[in-house]
Length: 619
Image (cartoon, rainbow, N blue to C red; front, top):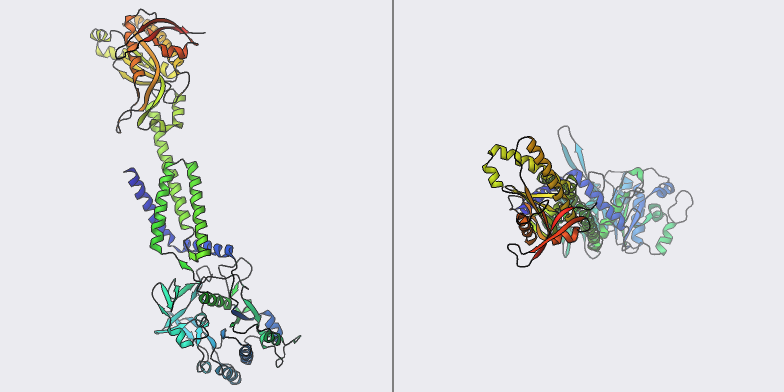
C-alpha cells in the first residue's frame, strides 16, 4: 500500500510537470538545450554540390550600385552560370515589382532560354483595421510566363527569433505553393512538375518516392544544420558577372574567367541571395554562437543539402517516450526512497549524465531528437520530493523515538538512538545485553494491608527513583509487571560496559531503597524489601510488538535466566539482596566486588549456573 501511494504521488507529479513542459517558457528552454547540441556537434561534411552566389559587401563595393541592382545584371548572371555548366539556378531574390520595361524584358528573355531556374515569391501578412490577412507576392508576370517555376522564400521563426524549421509549402485558396528549397532539391533527371507532383503528406510525414521527411507543425520540417554561417561554398555575385564584357569599379580582373577555367560551378546547384546585414535577410539559427547570423540563402542551402542526403532530424514518438520516462521516474523514486540522500545524489547525477550522453549520441549518430531537459527536471523534482518525504519521515521517527523512550532512557541514549532509527524497525536481532530484574518481596501481603491509594502512591515514588537510576546508568526500562521492574542494558544502542553499569545501577537502587525506607518510616509509612537479579547473555532485541503497537523488548534464555536469578534471591541470605550470574561476573569482575554463592540449576534450565552475591564497586 505504501509503494502504491508513492507511485500514485509520483505519477501525479509527473503529469503536472508534463503540463508545464507544454508551456512556451519551457519550449524556449528545451530549444536552447537542443541548440547547444548543434553547437557541440559543430560542422559536418557536406557534398559540395551546392554553391551560394552571395550579394555581399564586396559585391556592393565592386558594382558601386544602390539596391536593387539592375535586372540586366541578373540576366548576365544567369547567362554566365549556364555557361559554367550549373545544374540549377535558384533565386532567393524577389523580382516581384516591375522595373523598367527594358530591364524586365532582358531578364525575361534570358530566363526563357533555360528551364532550370527557380524564381522567388513570398507570403506576407497584411494588417487591416479589423483583421490580418495573407497575401502572395509573386514574380512579375513575364517571368511567370517562362517555363521556370517559382517558390516561396518564407522561413519560419520561433518565438525567440531563431530559425529551426523550414517551410516546405504554404497553402492559399486551396492552392499549394512550394518553397524554393523543395524546388532546388529536384534531381537533375526530373522536371519540376513531375518533382512537385510526387510530394504527398499526412499529419506526421512528407513522402516523395522512398524519401520520408518527418514534419513538425503543418508542412514544416526541422533543419539538420551542417554548420554555422559560411559552411557552404560562397562566391560573390560580382565575381560571376565580372567577365571580359563587364566592367566593374576598381581593379577589374575578370574573375569569371578563372571560375570558368576551374569548373567551380559545373553541375552545381547555385542559390543566389543576400548576405549583407543591411538587407535584413540574416537570421539566428541553432548554430549561432554570438558571432555571425546566417543568411536566409544559406538556410535554404542547408535544407536542400539535407533533402539530397536524406539526412532528416527525427523526433521520438511522444507516447513511447512518455511511457519510458515515466518508468524511469518511478524506478528512480524507489531508489531515492531506498537509499540515503547522500547516495541518492550520486544515483541522480549518474542517471542524468547517462541520459544526456544517450540523447547526444542519438542526436549525432541517428539524427534523433529527444527532449533533453525533461527527464533531468523530472528526476530532480522526484529527488526533491523524496528529500522532503525523507525529512518528514525522519521528523516523525524522531518525535516517536523521543516520546517513546524519553521516559525510559537517558537523554544521551535517546540522542544516539535518533542517529540509528532503523534499529527500531519491526523485528529483532541477536545482541549481547545485560538484563536486570527487581521485585518487591511479599508485595501481595503488602497490598492486602494497605489501601489502594496508599499503595499506588508508594509504588509511584519507588518506581520514579528506580527509573531515574536506570536511566542515569544508560539502561532502558523494558516493562513494569505489577511490582516487578525489568530493565535492559546495552540497548537499543550498543555499548561495551553494560554488565558493569547494570551492577552499578543495582547497587544504587539498593541504596536508594534504603533512603526511601527511612523516609517512609519517618512519615509513618510501611516500607518494603526488594530482590535484584542480573544476567548477561545473548538475547533477541528489537520491536517485538505488533504492527499496531510498538514494544521494544528482549526475549531469550538470557532474559529468562535473569528473571530466575531474581526469583531465587529469597533463598539466600545476602546482604544487599542482589545476585548476579557468572556471565555478568566475568564481564564486570575487574570493577565490582562479589562473593561466590552457589552453583544452581534454575527452573527451565538443565545446566548449572554459578551465582554471585554483589557486594560493592571497586574504588
